[in-house]
Each structure stands twice: as structure tokens, then as C-alpha cells.
Amino acid sequence: MSRILIVYYSATGRTRQVAELIQKTIGGNLVSIRTKVPYSNELLARWKDGHREVKDEILPELNDFPVDLNQYDVIFLGTPVWWYSVALPMKKFLVTHDLSGKIIFPFLTGDNAAGNAFYDLVGSLENCFVKTGLQVRFIENRQITSDWQIQNWAKTAVEKS
Image (cartoon, rainbow, N blue to C red; front, side):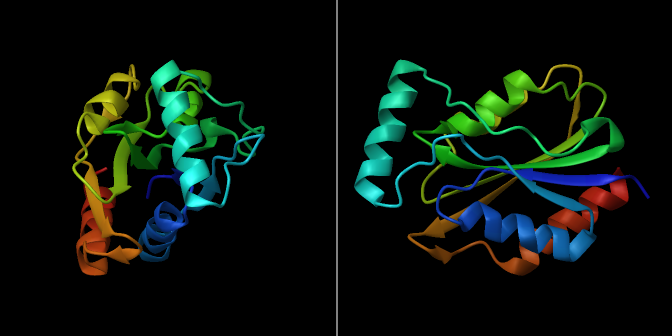
């Protein structure tokens, strides 16, 4: 079995929820990307800050990443979709960490269409083996994509890696 790492960024807890389900299903280690300055818990303030950062292409500073990526062969990358792209903390993670040679399974969470998020994510993963991703849909805080779909995707991913 490959050494598995599940890396995610979650602003509202929804991406964390999916990452935890993946870990429960296939094992592996779970690590959260954290910003040095947390986003507001208040929805409108978080939305305004995130929108400004996306518009101005400002990547937030991240806390040190607590694991050695060289210890892993397979990485599941989870991010919410922000304005039809990858959340900025995930973008910052991708430009500051070398994932070359890793097998990557991306998963996105959000209320709406993914837009360019998969394309943007894959475009940031040079020299990686990017496999089929999964979009996990929510309506507000209610998960629309079933746990079974997530579990089946994760199991299939590990079997094929």
C-alpha cells in the first residue's frame, strides 16, 4: 500500500468534513493547511476578504507545514472553490511545496459549479501524476454528494494508485 496523505484547506469546515471521511475510508495521515492570519468566522467579512484577495491575486501567508512530504507517495488535495477557482491558501501551498513525482487525487467542495478550479489546480501541479478528481457539492451546509460517492471514489483511487 502506498503512503497516503490527505491535505486540505477548509474555511467553513465542509472540506475538513470530506477530508475526514476520506481518511476514515482509506486511512492515511490528515493535515490541514492553516493561514497565519485566520479568516473571519463571520460569513460576509470572510467573503469580502476572500474576494479582495482573489481579485488582487494576494496569496495569504501560511503556517509551517507540519509533515515531510517526501514520506508520502499518494496525496489527496482538498480545497473549497472560491470564485470558480482554488481557495487562495491552497494556491499558496501549491506554489511553496514541491509535489513532483506524487500521485495526486484532487477534491473540491462548494455550493456552485467548480468553474476553472480543477484546471487551476492541475495547472499548479507540475511533474505530478494527477488522477481523477471529485467535486463534492453542498447547498449551504448540507452535503449533496453522498458519503457513499466520496467513499467509493477514495477506495477506487487507492486501488488504482
